[in-house]
Image (cartoon, rainbow, N blue to C red; front, side, top):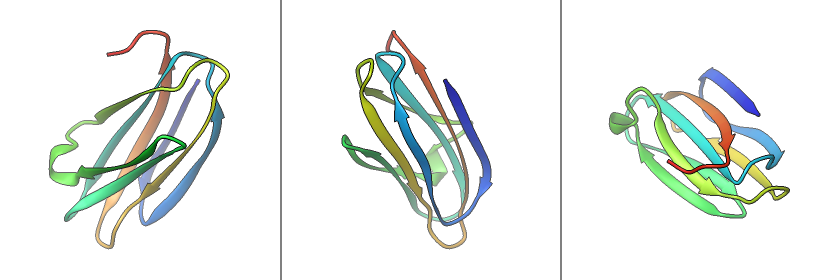
Length: 92
């Protein structure tokens, strides 16, 4: 499963996913000032510094096959971001 959004601003709910693999990866890149929030429910909220996301900051989460998880990105004024969600049975 791969889901991608490009050229986004503000906040966006990317969806609820049912894991087909053991690990979920959310790759985020953003431009603009400050941090962007990556929310993966039920796992938590993670702040990413836009200056350090580079070509796609890889964020790995162990979700377990069959588990449901939801992904939301909360951007701030003046930020543009993109995200890709992918899964794998191996981490890193």
